[in-house]
Image (tube, rainbow, N blue to C red; front, side, top):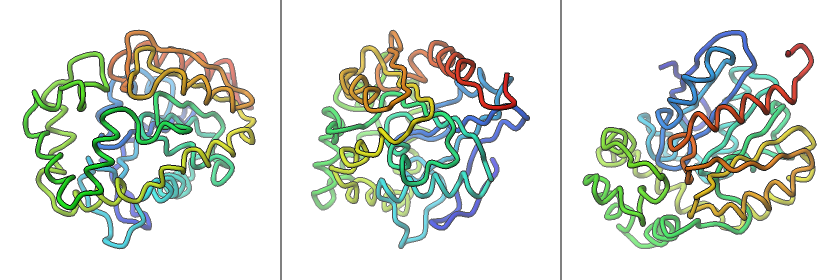
Length: 282
């Protein structure tokens, strides 16, 4: 994978290349680029698709010890990634962690179209049983380390109160091992992960919602119809704050819509881009 040096450290990223419209896919906490693999495979024939591996737990390269890895810090890194690669007129697609919302009204000049799939938003933080457990563990000395150990055992990770509750389909043990391998083997990766968990301001998504009405460019809110962690009601409220937004529910999907029903999600992304062309597109 290509790499790029950012202010916080070096990150890997996937880049399909090509001359098509630019789509940047953003993963959530504890995932890497592989969570988007089926969506990338579908879109790459017509789009240039990039997936930065953000330092939120499944990254392979530790960040600088003094790096700001709060939610706002990760949002700034995402903006820096777009700047450094000079990506313009980006269709930015976010899942799980609500990072992209923090760019609206602050650093959104490179975003032409915004897609928010099931993610933290408004007052839904920490989200669901999983989020509350993680948040509480981050406040107790050694709590995160003990919680992370459960991912050594796929049957524990697949429990409804753990990672399994984020997907309708059973998650392959190979993916679980890939996502949580860095946390289980690297003290520095655990440090980065703990920073995010401890430094997120629970009010940051409520505050970010105040900027959403200023985003007058096209937006798509595509929510998992069966999401329990990020309820569809949150998605509908989120869409209501964006002036030019369309709300859709992805059937047979929970939070990880790109794994549960990638065909439906990519069809919605394609439709969204086609219905909202930029000058020179179409």
